[in-house]
Length: 321
Image 1 (tube, rainbow, N blue to C red):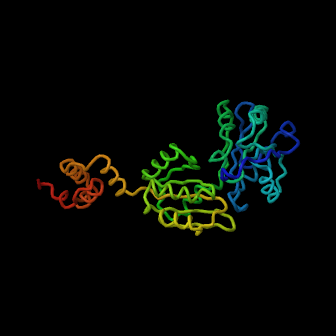
Image 2: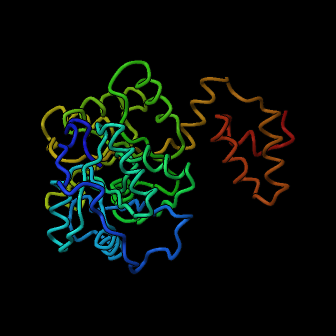
Image 3: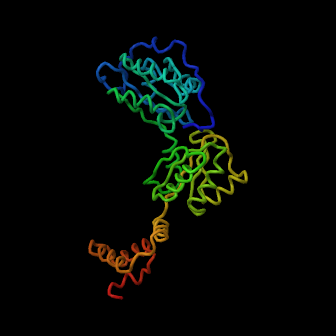
């Protein structure tokens, strides 16, 4: 995962070119069979910060394939130097020409394997590569995931929030109606949400989240995950928005925001505001249904009261009119 403000990677691929790659030898952890005569496209996750986060299988694949397509070959060479990987590199990033994609597809069609990596994390997840993977899969080619580090998953487990159910937003639109609609959907979701953001835009995004979700909603701001200056700041949206505006949060490095899910009470309040209160007859019928299913009447009344905004004591007494 890389900030959109970092710009396109330089086209500094190895000079040998695609045609010079030798056939891949069978390596540990690799599938035994090709589909037809085509090569395998390995989608390889690389470290998001600490170079020690790479998996053994990823290193084996990167050493064994004849060619690696990298978002920025300069950054990938650091990983290669650490693990003594000598495989040929070629650049492939968001601004690469269609001709480069065609070259890579021809490489795969010739029966030679190819590994795809980005600067950090898992390719295709807010990073380049989806067009290449989709095109090769559409031809019946084999696409092999090599899982590993993920900024989204690292942020979720470090957030300190309830994240059993969550959504991934990636980078938000910068402005306009699409941004407002996206924020409104995030605010109304009963799942936690993972958002990637450029450092300079963190204060504005927190301000917009306050407007969309309310200041009391909790958020975790995760910065420089797995790196030397890793930091996770937790608090309400309004408090952290004020800290970011006031210079209390270091706005450097890679950022992942994890927004708390809308609570049941918030969802119910919003539904009541939109649709009006539920009728007492319907609410009591729901209590009766829960009781018939084995729920204690007190618990059933509590649940329905939260969902409808009606008085729990009135719901508990089924015969009162």
